Length: 137
Length: 349
Image (cartoon, rainbow over all chains, first blue to last red; front, side, top):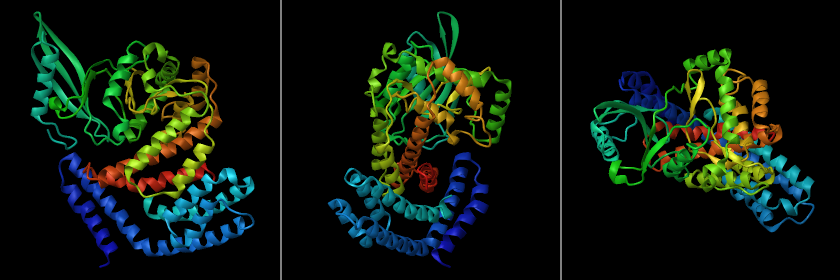
């Protein structure tokens, strides 16, 4: 039994056998809620590898597109460094740093370049969010 | 005293009675009746009871409400019973329906944690989320009196003289974008305290909010969570505005946006499950003289998404830090992407 299957089984036991047998309202709610948490963890764990791979591919494509978008003119130093470091942190940390750096550089960037860059980053953020919603929603 | 929600021990009850005897020395034979712990929420613990005593040969009974800070409230240091006491005290001189408050104690030696004691106002507070609550508000909407009271009470809140009431201590924002920026800073602080890993969608949202903070020149008292569920209802009218934890001085559209938000209704077009949208616009604008600014309300709706994320991050952080064992808090970790999805849609993606 894989770890995610074990968690799902634990969630089922809590939901179907343990929680219904608890009399007092508060611990009963806690038992049901523990079942929900374990079930979500199970789904997240089952998808973790595929989602991480998809996330890395999305960030690689983003880095390539932003390189083209922003390559025509000298970049504010902090934004340039964050963009260059994106391949080393192709995850939420890297994306977070990129979004923060883009906003911090907004005043120095051409309005249209900022708008297009943010729109392209948002495409990637949307894809990541949709993956999370598979188990979070 | 047990820390487990849903239980209360005789020892706490007897300690409350002993405290009240000290506060009411003329009360003979003071005892508590009908002690009930309510609202197993994520904020302050709340007990309702009737204090009964004899005084000068006459029997007295006074409904009371005690709120205690468990030290692990979702809002952390941003929710302060001492401030709540000052706000409620200040509101006593205003026309707003709110509970009278009697005592605040910061000394944990009395009941293990800071607490306040206030009046138990007649009324009930049906949750708008369950089937029963929805049916209650639907029936009240059809009768018409409660929706008018809802709107009128908000108008009273927004037009009361907060300077005369002595509410400046809440902090007066400067004209311009100061109010919005203060709110952003507050929720940013709660997010930082939560220890939650970075969320790039949230960073995008905050960047957008900071870049687009609206100017506001009007400063009123703002409740911060004005909706059914936070309002006590008696005989088809609002008998008290409750939950004074998020109040600020600032743009009244912040409250209006909350009323208009989809967040606060379920399975109905009625605002807060109660009020017809057109009637709300008409009656609120007539009662306050303010014009509802839809664009600014849309901005505040996005700010509420940031606030919701801050709440859920704080909640799941409390569980992760071991400050609470309530598994419902752990569950909120997965509420973060759900709210971020709403935020992303507000931003157009």
